[in-house]
Each structure stands twice: as structure tokens, then as C-alpha cells.
Length: 454
Image 1 (tube, helix red, strand yellow):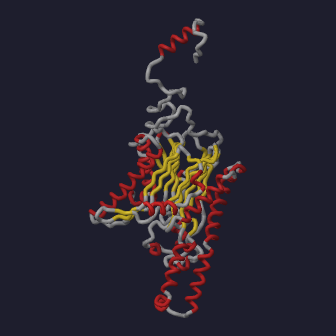
Image 2: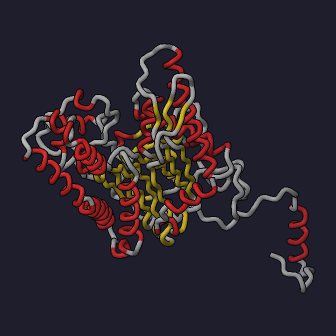
Image 3: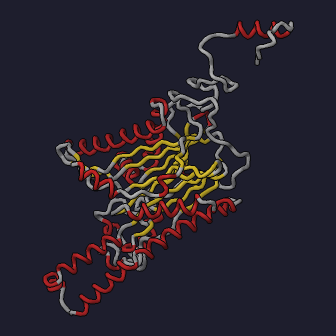
């Protein structure tokens, strides 16, 4: 047993991003994938494919990211390291406009895509050689399967390697402005305090899947119908990697009828959004969390977003740490997801899912109250810039948390906050009489000279 654990530890590769300074205003919750059985039991189907980043480069720059791997984790690992290297090692110092920052993010995504596809050229060449060998022999499919079983197994392995990809959502906070890039099924929400101190949630990212009407219409124009994707739930229509869905799509059964590449590489970049006192927290979600909310809320994205933020708001009042908030929310979601599955089974209703993917939730707090936390007197959550932003979230993605959830504005005098209006810790003993007598003695010049009174 000890030898096995040692081997597993040696197989774990350490990334340079693991040594970056972690942002202490961030909490992360995680749960590994599960496959459900009708008797209520469940088990992990594969090693986690999610990767995350929550680091500070300096006082003006921090990066937050979640990447969810498709089929495997290697593209997510590669992309995270590449994006961090491109965005955190000083390149942003020369970016003085929103457009310059967004262009650097776009170039970083492009560099990661090109670098990964270049790295699998050997697999593409081997696949081409095998296909040429099989076609040159002039045999039918049955004859090939009988005589070239090992070759076909090798071809299947190569195709699996070429299908590996990743969804990504990346948030940069640069000089008190938020920039957001995403591709695939990961998601980003910005929660702010609106009118009457209600908490509002805006989805900053765009879901690249068949639930997105524009993506579905794009595939329809390529000649792909809904039935092409049966058995491929929430298929990601854009991603990093996945050569088989791009240049190699003719060899993929459910994509081969498309007029051109159906899976594309085209990230969405938005920003900069000024971080004002109205901004409460940023939420990043893995594709597995998005899918779990989809299953729980019967496909309504807005309802899923509101339900998630409702849980986060409640856990802010229940937990003493941001990590506790995020992990408690994840626990509630995964339990609810399993409960919904069991309810469908017990009621003999159509079961639309029988598993759950990896779940990762990242919460970057700006100034939302955590009443049970120990608060440092000199803590500075964030510095706010007075410069207006020329890029704001779209109103069409805007929704308000239901009024039965009580969420108040977080400020220095909020109930449960241990500070007074001068940012001094409130006393548990009334010293007003003492201060009154000190003031009187000071006015009469009767204070001891060897004691300094403030």
C-alpha cells in the first residue's frame, strides 16, 4: 500500500503555477465526478479533469481561471500554464487601454491553441499513415477488422488523443478593472448590489453549446441537425484543442456531414468592467457545475444562475471562510443533483442523466459581508478606481434575486461587522465616561506628561 501511494505521488506533476501567490479573497469548492446507480450508490468514473488558478501577480494584477477538460485533462493543464505565462509575467505592463488588455488576452488564447495543435502533429501524421496503409490494401471494413485488429486499436487510441480538448473561463483584475475571456461551457457571473440593495447576477460569459441558439443555428447552416448530437449532451461547440472536431471532423461520425469545421476556436473577450463598491463577488464555474445546474433546473440557465447565487448568499451568512462558502455550495449542489436523479428513478419518470461531471466553483469576493469571519482591522479588500468603464455587461443577461432572499449592502457599519464608522473595532465595554474625563483633563491641562493620549 505504501509503495502504491508513493508511485501515485511520483506520477503527480507539479506545475509552476502551483507556486504563484494565492489570492486570499478567493474561495474554491470542488467535487469529483460521479456515476449513479438506481440503488442509490455512486462511484467516481475517472480522475478529475478540472484545473483552476487563483493567484496574485502584484498589487494591480490577479488572475482567476477554471478549465474543464474534455475526455482528458492534458489540454486543460497545457492551456492553464500557457495562459498564466502570457498574462502574469509582465506583458500587461504596457497595456494602458481596455482594448489593449483584451487583445493580449485574445493573443494568449490563440497562442495556447496553436501551441497545443502543433504538439500533436505526430499523432496526426501517424493517423494519416495508418489510413493510407488501410486504403491501399483495397479491403472492405470486415476484412480490415479481421486482419488489422491491432492497427485499428492503435487508430482508435490516436483518435481519442486527437479528441481531447478543454473549455476555459479566465478572469483578470487589472488596475481595478475586470476582463473576462471564455470558450466552451465554463461560465462567469458577476454579482452586484442593485436598487433597494437587492443582489443582481449578470452572466459575463457565453455558453458555447447546443443550448445557445446562435451556436445551434451556426451548426444547422453547416448541415448538422439535432439528431447528429444524440448521446452527446451539452456538446461544446467551441473549445481549445479537439483536433477531431476541427480539421479532423470528417473522421467523426456525428460531425462528418458538416460543410466545414463544426467545432471552432473563437473565444469571447469582454471588459474592462470597473470594480465599484456595488460589485460584491465574481463567480467562475466549471462545465460540470453548469451541467449540474442544467439538470437540476430543467434546462433554464437563468434559473440555475439565480439558484447558485442564492446558495452562495446564504452560505456567506453561514460560513466563516470563503473556502467554506464555496465548498458548502458545492456540497448542496451535488447532493441536490443526486436527489433529483433518485426522484426520477423512484417515480418511474424519464431519466435524462445518470452521472455528474467534475464540479469546481470559484468565488472571488470584493466586498460582500462574511459576518462570521475574523476581520483584520487593516484589511483592504480592494481598491476602487474612479475611472469610468466603456464596457459593461449586457442588460439581456441581467436578472434579480427573488425578494425572499435578504441581501443587504455590505459596508463598514453593516450589522455583524465588528468595526465602527471610523474603522475601529467596536468595544465590548462602554468607555464613554473614561473618554469624557480625559477630554476634560486635557482642556484643563491636567493630563500626566509622561503618558500619551490620543
